[in-house]
Amino acid sequence: MSNARRGKRILTGPRLLVAWILLYGSLFIAWDVLTAHKILPPFFFGQPIDVWKQLVDWFVTGTIWEHLWVTLLETLLSFTAGLLLGLAGGFWLGLDRSSSALLSPAIISFNSMPRVVIAPIFMLWFGLGIWSKVAFSTSLVFFIIFFNVYRGVRDINPVILANARMIGADRRQLLRTVYLPSALSWVFTSLHAAVGMAYVGVVVSEYLGSRKGVGNLILQAEGTFDINGIFAGVVVLTVCAIMLDLLVTLVERRLLSWQPQ
Image 1 (cartoon, helix red, strand yellow):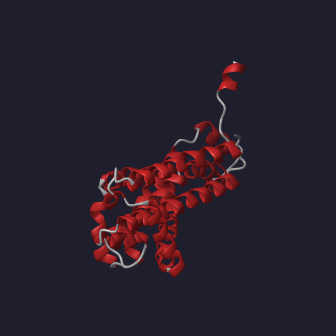
Image 2: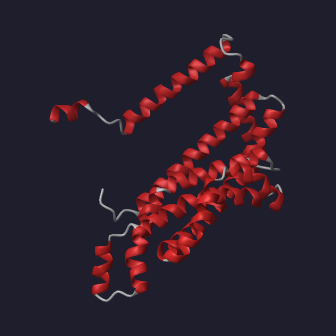
Image 3: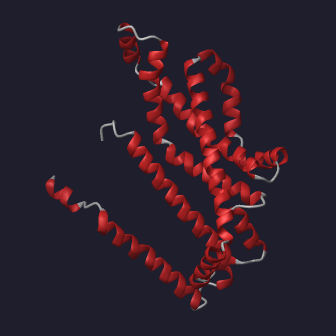
């Protein structure tokens, strides 16, 4: 058993960093070589050096900052709104079985609806500003949080509830000491998916129609057949997505430090 464990080494720390550099560096070099020798047409695949020049130009001239700020602001607003609405709705329907039975068909049908279809409706209602993006992205985040909170409330061990009631816990104490910790455990496990969905929803809605945002910047590059600009926008979005995921990880570790590993 010990030999098997020794054979399965997990990459961590400096080894993981070196592995990342080797992997993504080799992909970058392969991309550059294939496009330089026209094996991959540069018109369709771009060239790494031109993508890098585009990124430098955006950041030096300040073109990217306003677009990036709008995208991140929309992501933050939609994530916060979806989180709060999901918590409220999940607790309400998780604790009120009558309301749950009444509203379940509507919730299931709305959740199964392709969200891209309703994006133009939000744009008609709220215009091409940030609020149509926030509304669209909130509708994505809401259901991720809602179903996790709902399941967390419904899946509480009835023995725990019976013991809490036996020692005299009232409804408010049950909510604070039993229901809330159980639901929040489910919520924190879905935070990565929720913030990722908020980010994706914002970028997609910007791409469909907007005045500002990284999605709009990519749309402008596509309109001029600027493949390097498209790849530069994708790089910016990817880096921001990684940073958002790392931020959620730090918050999750801090708030769930009480949980056993």
